[in-house]
Length: 92
Image (cartoon, rainbow, N blue to C red):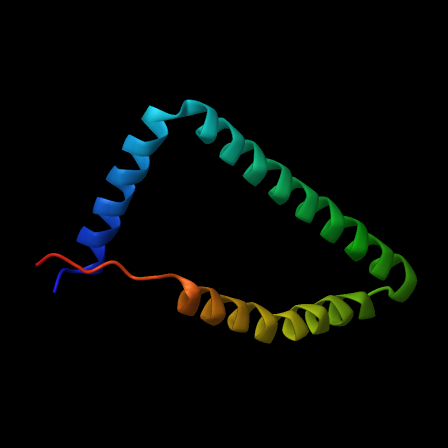
């Protein structure tokens, strides 16, 4: 069985070759990531500002509680996404 580092290097090589074939897809993917990260940052910044303005230092604990509540959801999403991805047979 190959190590995870070799598998990751092979996956990155495949991704780079795919992006070279279709640079438009690369542009769309990068723009989607940029907009998603920017929107998430803006929403969390506004939420934390509102919480701190209304609750003062207790707003920190409210944000911590929101993060703690979101953690089980993210873990279940990760497990369900991994279960739905078909695995290709590995060459050894």
